[in-house]
Amino acid sequence: MLKKVVKDVFKINRNPISWEKPIGAAICGAFPILMGLLFHQIRYGLLASMGGFAYLYMFYEPYAQRMKKMFFVSIGITASVALGIFTRPYPILVVVTVALIGAIVLFICGTLKVAGPGPVFFVMIFMMFTGMDLEKQEIPIIIFLIFLVTLLCWGVSMIGYFFNPHGPELKKIKQLYLVLGQFSEAIGSCDITSVRNKVVKTLKETEEILAIGHMPWKESAFFERLVLLNEQANFLFLELSKIHSNKNQTLPKELTERIKKISSYLPIDDKIEIEKKQIQHDEIYTELLEIIYGIETIIMMPEQEMKKEVNLIKPSVFHKLKEFFHKDSIICSYSIRYGVVLAMSAVIAYQLDVIKPYWITLSCAAVMCGATIASTLNRAIQRSLGTIIGIFLSIVILSIQPKGILLVLFYMVLTILIEVAITQNYALAAIFITANAILIAENSAQIYNTMYFAGYRITNIIIGSLIGVLGTYIISYKSASKRINYLIAELLRSHARVLVYLQYSDEEHNGSMIKQKLDMDFDNLKMAYTYALGEFSKESKKLDRLWPAFFALEHMSYLLSKHCIDKGKLTLDEKQLGELVLVYIRMANDIEQNREIQYKNVQEIKEISEFCRELSLFQEAYKIR
Image 1: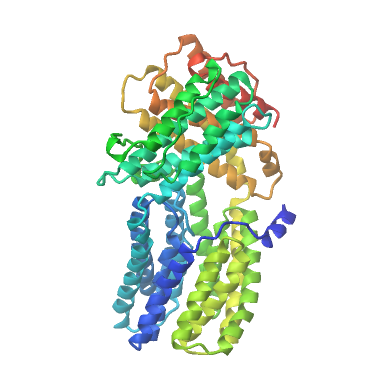
Image 2: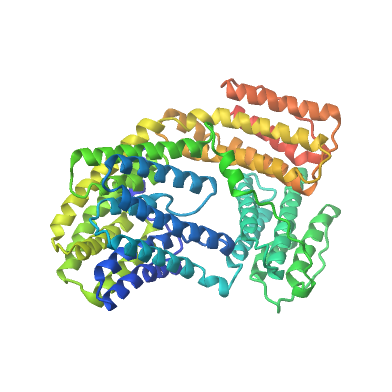
């Protein structure tokens, strides 16, 4: 594991580079500095530029979600500034507040699956303002200016809406049909599991993106078309899975090519004309061809004919937060741990009586975003190395003595480099983060002593990184891996409850609630499994062999989830249902008590044949792990 961590420190990720976010971040951060120059208030401009951190929470998500998320980020950043200013004289309040900010923001981001840097910049801006001496008359001005800059970030992040209001959703639908094409090509091969799991993951992500991207106040034929395409993608996947399970043979090349070509018709254009060439086929492919023809019809359908009523399942934010707030929730326990370690770092920083103690807590917050001890250690090494190199870069930049417009240009270039590098390697990004921070610090403090800033910064960063690593190790050692058996057992019991519910429920509208509970149980297991794989323990190596069973569980959860919405009711024989539930209960009890499970032959039931096969696969995979 240690060897892997060291290797990952220098690994360059080959992620595609998007210039939208780096340029947007540079504009949002540089604009207040430029205004400060124009109005001869450079200090106010530099302080207000911290509001530009809000833009770093912008990701390529649906605009309906982005609009709400960025607004609340704006409020949160401004509140962090105010709390930092007013708690500054009271160290005990600073310790408690930083713990609460870190824990609450991390819990919200983890529960709602909010992409981004999590609580890092909320903690950063809070701690930075606990170390600033401000005059009383300056306080309302600075808070107001930072709020204006966060609103600027909100506005800049929404510009794309006016040109392509459903761009993120369309991109996901295109990706979905690409992976379906790969799946169709892999049918009949021995190693289809990884491709199938990729499709299930993409189907779930697409459904979530469409749910959060729906704007009830705005009718859109384009969005309705995307919803229809998503529904057909689910039907296509289920039919392809059925063909693979029943015949275990490759699809005819004509069918595979037809499916792979669907993604090339997206983005949708009114000029698209798809030649409906009839394919000679066996009878077993009739239903598959009907689905393909249906997809092509939806793509070519004129907007005025779109009459789809959008009825997407969207659990309330309060409901999701409530469901994940319990002792067995991995994100809840991790959030509490995060807050405790932040509080410890703040206490140590004050006790050491170092210059600018807030850098210790900032570094601790940054490295702990790695979630596991392995990734935390990785980020700690990367941050320390990046800081050392970044100090030399800042000496070179400050030797030029940038002022005025040159200062703005350097800030913009470094910000762009940070955003580009962060997706490739964190150590590389830390170089530019350090140079940019020292550039701003020198000009706002007007001390102009590079080694002064560099010396305390590197010392504090190393101390903070060590606290983050040690805190993560002590508090979370094996915490996730110890929960895996219990969480698998809970998910299996949840499956059994869904089967019973679908058999006996006569209510039409409660399928969505049982589906939400099922999805949340799986998400909790998925988070725990991910964290457990990054722990330094023998148990994590054993769990690495559990992935076939984990993916079988994911597929079973997906099939049950779709049944809740598409069909809403099962019509099984009482004996068949009883045998299925009994298999589940026995497995759950054996796994929870860490006993070897006894394989039970599952009789295939026509109505849920694919599910029964996956249940047998899960037993086999768990037994031989």
